[in-house]
Image (cartoon, rainbow, N blue to C red):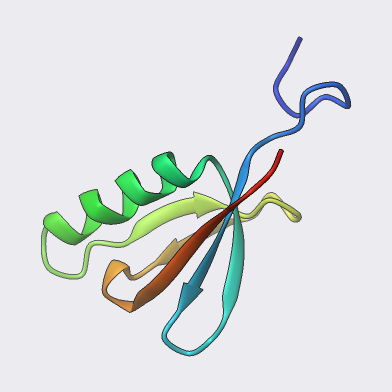
Length: 74
């Protein structure tokens, strides 16, 4: 069974940045958090790259601008 099929939904996490903009990201809260922490420990201006849950488009988030992350039930 492939992830995201009707019988197995993909986990998603909502990330809120300082502007109040919210992004629904594919991945568990733990996976998203690890990517944000990893980017913040990387080089100056390293971005955390994710896939938006609804559109499938790639987005980059500045880890210094993240104020909250919350998981959604799959």
